[in-house]
Amino acid sequence: MSHTTMLFGLLGLAALAGWLTGHGAGLAAARRLRDEELWRARHIDALTGLPNRADAEARITAMITGKEPVCVGFADLDRFKQLNYDHGHATGDQALRHIATLLRAHAPDTAVWRLHGDEFVFAWPTALHDSLIHAQHLRHLISSTPMPLPGGGLLTLSMSIGVAEHRPGTDLSLLLHQADLAMHDAKDRQAGCVSYDPAHGAATVADRPFERARDRRNHRTTAEPETTL
Image (spheres, rainbow, N blue to C red):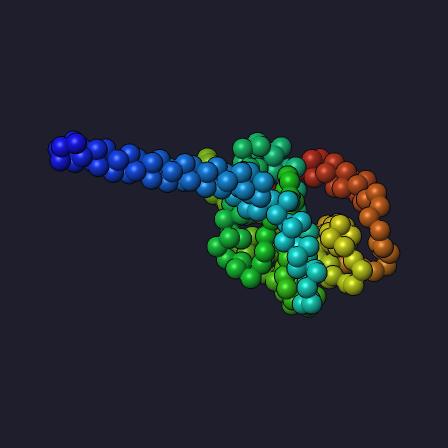
């Protein structure tokens, strides 16, 4: 075999090795991209870019299995149905994105998730008193930062938050249920932010007794529109 033939053979093998290496790297990058897309689909809310319910369940469960204090907040926007009625669902979606942007930028000490609709969940590795301070900060942040409307003008938003402290023997579902009850207490009292009241006696996750109260509020806000949401 001539030296020229050997040289071309070696060059061909080198080229093949380079192609295989590059092809393998390309396949690995494609797999990583696919895995990242799958992870985002499972854990990230498409509308707001916030972590979603599945991510909340995993992360809060991990938090409450530790030894540190944990509180969760359950929140939704005040008069959100009226907002959609007056301004359209596109503006309602804009409001949710507006809130998500505020929370990401100005609430670094709060873990935030969007569940669905206008419902959000927060978590803090702090005792109840400090967690209520965090919750009040979130309410002030949202109400003091109006959202620009597409046609001009500003829309002031507000949020009601219920806070529940994790106790031994309380699982994630019950903890969220207690925070949800507290949130509806905040709505009924127009108090903005309240902690879970043990008088509810929510030792299990039962059918939510406040659905009728929510229906009454929605009917009332539709009949009596307000300029501040």
